[in-house]
Length: 196
Image 1 (cartoon, helix red, strand yellow):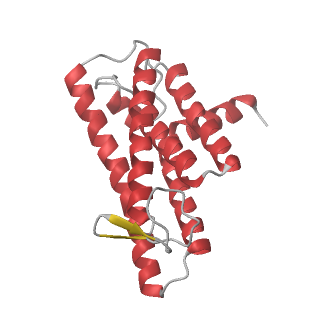
Image 2 (image 1 turned 135 degrees about the horizontal axis):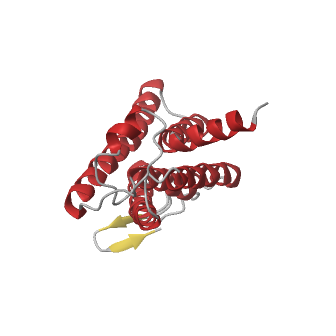
Image 3 (image 1 turned 180 degrees about the vertical axis):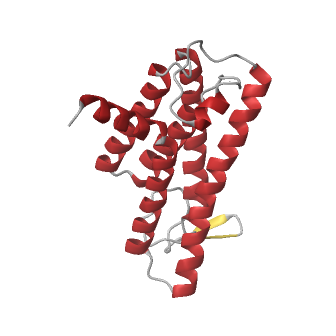
């Protein structure tokens, strides 16, 4: 197999990293929801749909935030960009700070790492995010500072998404196996005192 074909395939995988990581997050949601939920079919579908919609909405919000930041900062992209598709050709005329690819990839990576705590998936997601960042740098679509800024914004967004997701979808009363500060099923608050 030709080394150029392999390199081009790797770079294309890097380019599509934000989408691959979002799909990975959705697949992890489906997997964890189907293995832990023992509710009625309607409640299961409703919960699963809400989880997936939250992740999709958050990614769209990140995309919008990235565009807003680019218009506010107005820092141009590096010169002599290598464009690998029509989207890169269109993007080459826009601003580059912060990197949208780095931001959305980091958002999904941090969300996956903090929410699911699966070492194998986290390692794969980390490799995918690094590949995305490297592709954007090596093709001169972004400078190091633009990639770093995008990664920082994305990490903050992913951390926030993880907290929102955990808070929104962790039951108020658990069977003692919840890892948050909410009361367990044997404890409830009555007035101002806790009764166990």
